[in-house]
Amino acid sequence: MLRVLYFVIIVALAILAALWLVDLPDEVTIDGPGYQLTTSLSVLIVAVAVIAFVWALIYHVWRWLLSGPRRIAAGWSARRHDRGYQALTKGLVAIAAGDAKAAQRYGRDSGRLLDNPLNLLVLAQAARLAGDEAGARRHFQAMLAHPETEFLGLRGLLVQATNAGDWGAALGYARRAYALRPEAEWVGNALFDLQARVGDWRAAQKTLEAAVRRKHVAAGHAPRRRAVLLAERARAAYGDGEETAALGLAREAHKLAPSLTAAAALAAGLLAKTGKKRAAAKVIEAAWRLAPHGELAAAYAALGDGESALDRFKRLERLHALNADHPESHLALAQAALDAELWGAARNHLLAAADRQPSQRVYRLLAAAEERESGSTEAVRNWLMSAASAPPDPAWLCDKCGDASAEWSARCEACGGFDSLAWKLPPTPAHLSAAPVTTPLPRAVDGPVPSPSIAPPGAVDDTATRE
Picture 1 (cartoon, rainbow, N blue to C red):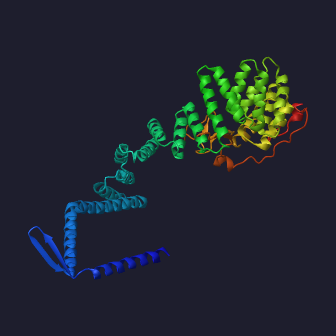
Picture 2: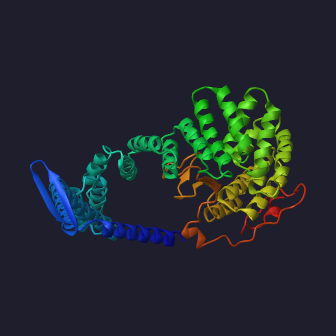
């Protein structure tokens, strides 16, 4: 509707202009100082139009002369930028394709055509593809001088330092990258791993808390990680003689993760040292329900100063009852029974442990029990032979690399994995798995066992002879 109205107005104005021109006289006289010009109206209109056209042409030519060189330079610059970005794109494609030579060529071309530090990234990656780590490092370091590429340069240097095992340098690069972009999840993870690797547990805990706030760590995983860090801080404080601080940290770690053996054992030991044996027992019992371990059993046994071996056995029966089917529960009570010379109870629990999780330790304890009780050389030898062909004892094994550690730590000494150590059976060696123990074990007997002999697999029953 508006377009129609606009058209009608234009047509009306054109008609009015035509009528006005028709009403004008045919001749027009122009008087000037010393001259008089008489001409027709049509000639005058044509003359005015020609003069306007000439002036417009002169004006445009003048503007072109003024702005032409600048426009020509801008066109050349645009074409140069287009060629530069094409070279940069081709360089990135060459890197993805693994063509180091092409990537280097395109990287140099883009650097010549563009004032853009991204060509340094292409050159650095091309150098890495060619195996020139020193050249890559130079390009990554050059990227640090440009705000646009500083973060990428730090990432490249961090990867190089990590691959070279230079943890101090890697940690420095991770800190700089984290300061630039703390919201980047990979930076927080890398910083946390490196802080844990070098044992800076307090800083690692701060990094963890920041990651939790940014929701980079699942809410269900955060308590366990906090507990592991607190346990390591407790161990460090205990090593420095700060027992009060160590106790507070260990108890906090135990509350967050009751199954964490190291935290429970340390907290129990320090509580017992301060005379709080009931609290120490509760800590061990809470951990035992979830993850029985020999270290906890030893700490529980140590709570009864001055008690007899029989009293200790009775007290450990309470611990056993909290997780009665676990092999470590049977082993803990079997050891207490051996100390109290309760041979029948020792045999029952050792055989129960062997039935649930046969290991070399179980058979060695059976051999020791046989030697202490009867002194039968043949029976002891048979148990030791069973131990030689039994699976290895449980150990602290890394879930990532499989390396065994003598004691628990928050990180694996071999691969640096955080919270990767678990108490479990190592893989059975091939020569043991090829020749498993096939002789059936003696059946456990309820109650006291009158016979003084523990019959090992394959042993000859010489009870009558000894009697």
